[in-house]
Amino acid sequence: MPELPEVETVVRTVAPKLTGRRIVSARFSSKHVVRENFARLAKRIAGRTVTGVTRHGKFIVIELDKGNLLVHLGMTGRLIVNGETGPYTHALFELDEGVLVYNDPRQFGRIEWSEGLPARVARLGPDALTVTEDEFLTRLKSRRSVRIKPLLLNQAFVRGMGNIYADEALFASGIHPRADAARLSKPRARRLHAAMVEVLRAAIASKGSTISDYVYDENRRGSFQQHLLAYGRTGEPCERCGTPIRRIVLGGRGTHFCPKCQRA
DNA sequence: TCAAATGTTTGATC
DNA sequence: GGATCAAACATTTG
Image (cartoon, rainbow, N blue to C red; front, side, top):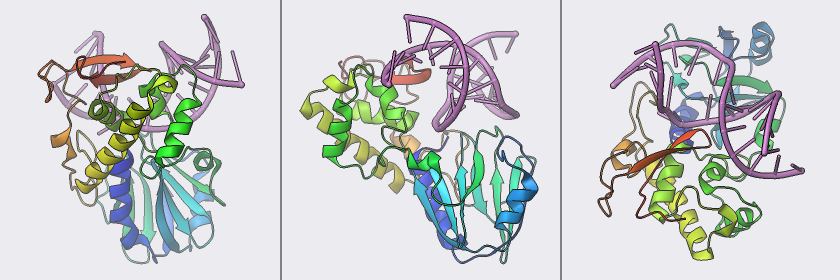
């Protein structure tokens, strides 16, 4: 569910409410979401104060006065201050004022503690929102014979891109998802970089895309799904040329594109 | 009943 | 060493 714009929206919503709060206690109930011993994690964070909340690609780092709490929302994770608890609540943080609730039906999300910046985050590529054109082009060229769509989804290449915005950025720049990344012409590679940054910015301005699960704050939905031109539009006419949008599977992910506007 | 779903990791295979 | 693919994770929805 959540890609860079959705995670950014969650961070912006939660950061002002969490910063300065003290974690009084924490309870966990999913072995999938929390891999370490529940009691040990709870003990580590009890009494700690939140000094900030930051986004690293799709990871959320809740910075404490000692250590960090790393949160990844997976596909269906929701992180809400003073949110409602229910059967899918897998972490509950009692604060000096209010509670922080983590809900996640599919339990693909993760919550873990780390002393400094965790290795998971350290090995990610540059953030998709802020990577410079030069660095993007250089990194593209260094990849031999990789298709561009799966490469955009590779968090070691750029952090933050997901299936929706990869399809949208390729549509906007007129590039076929199977195009060889290293062989993209310079103008096309530049257009892709610009399209990627632009679609992410526009999506953040719309508070993300709510297609099924994603909400921020207390049940508030994003609206960027109304502006999607490729993702999820299988069979519908392309906004630019009228050709039906096609769906293929690439790297195991549904991939939507216009066969006429997007050439290899 | 089957397929698909916005994510990541791992292991097998080319 | 890299790239690709399927599977695994757990649940809902069409």
